[in-house]
Amino acid sequence: MNPTGKEPMTRATIPSDAIEWLSAWRGVRALVLAEDAAWPRRLDRAGHHIFVMSDDPDLAAQLNPLPRINAFVARPEAIPTDPFQFEVVFVHQRLHRFDLSQALPQIARVLRPGGCLSASYLIRDDSVPWVRRLAALLRRFDPMAMKGNYGNDSLAALKESRYFPETEERAFRVWQSVSHEDLLNLVRRQPLAANLDETQLSALLRQVSELFDSAVRPGESLRLPFQLICCRAWVNHEGLTATVALPESALSIPL
Image (cartoon, rainbow, N blue to C red; front, side, top):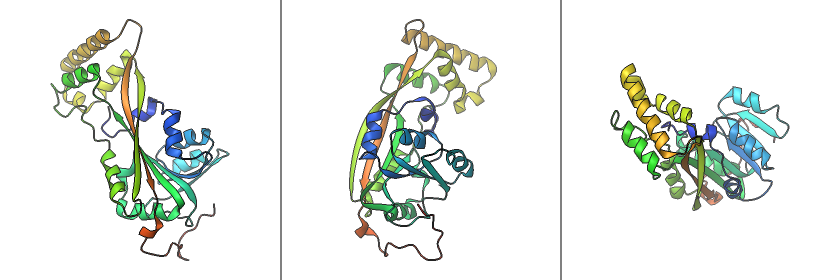
């Protein structure tokens, strides 16, 4: 329920068929534009040859000891590798954080002919009745509650890019188990909670508890639904306006 879209990835399990679809092939040589270790580790377990690029030195230091992952520090607007290095470039939940006018030609440059950019976003599905009831309850205190902007509108930029003229999309259903305490903690982390006094917050949490109890059998957990929106964008190097070659003065990372 975090409007940044980060929270689902901490608990929700991405289905294997989604990983397979985004990977396009088995055992690919891939670059992951990552902000945490979860996605690279999952792709590594799927048997891919993984390189990780992040602007976080701590993440690179965390991943580099792993035997089959190579991590380095850089930004997608200036990828310091030779051209045609990767069959797939993965980016999950963060395409909107890049300057796409610079990042997309860089990603196209490092993809091999026939390769693809595989982008994905995990988005809460508010169509389930208990989720709608929770949203209505929270919006009594904040009209913007549970109206998170996940950034998935950035996928539309791929359809308009001359570097990726052919795109495919697919959605996968993902379920996250939510216990009674999980639900209360999710509400406590909502921005509206900071604007309530202790009496108001206690009353709200009591109503949330009642909602939970009415939606499940005793001893069970709720299931919070998400949609994993996936896009494969296939590279076209004819869209590049300059020769695909690394300048002599640029930093090169041998792979």
